[in-house]
Image (cartoon, rainbow, N blue to C red):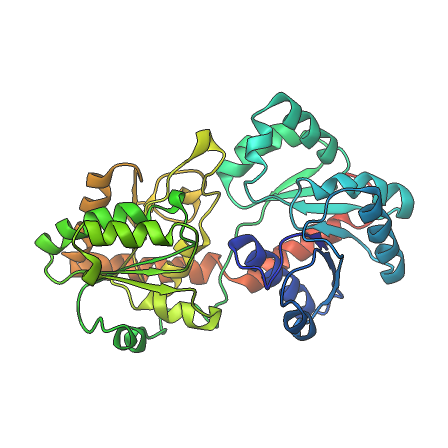
Length: 377
């Protein structure tokens, strides 16, 4: 595996890469990860079930030096296949590795490549990458629709959406301790778990809160996570007169996240597109995490989110830029207990059937076996 995206850095891509590598190890495969440096990584690297080799740079690029190190690692490990944590730009090394070692490559995509696919120069770069890959994977149908034409016909194009750990995220998770810890009690609670950045839509939730409290008295909002937008969100809550009804938890340890999802009556993240589509939700793993613990969701209808939320069955999709629509969707769930329960049950069942990491790992193993041998598909 060659990647810039791995813990202890926090994020959906890092989680995706780590979970699949752990799954491969659990299945008996040997995994060695070539990655970039990160602060305080020693503890994680020692505990990981796979070997981590870090370069002394915060960002790996497809340079001759990185290529040499990757080739040496492939040769030392007698690797059967190379896996890139993200196709752009590091999978640009795939052709060199194949020519030097005879080993083929597979690359993940996560939606970050969409911006490149929308420019002629970027499309040319993606086509060169695709020409040297055995397979590419996509987290959502939206990503595949945009990226497959750009990468071209050489590799196999396959779906590999995110998943959840069924031992951690399941309908038996109890959120009562979290409610007690943050002083929520039995009040109606809307939860949002995400990095605090503008496109996630936490500002819209704050703008809706006063209206929710008029319709459903004592409604509270819990914002879980941290990020550069936190100060602006706290000021917004104060200026809207709802600061006492908003709880900012900051970053929460990963083993406590399931209970924070389960504490909510509704999970809401009205994500939206920014910068002309350069920032957009390619899937939204938080939606299936909420669904897995039995909480219905309200989500922005953007990018790959419809692959993570079954409209009208596990949640409600809305225009994340439409404050009135977001507010109405959340109130509609808060005020209707039977509907919430039905959606929660449907979401948990769907995740049990379709979104477990063991299932996703086996799908990846099939892809990797097909790619072993060295030539593009």
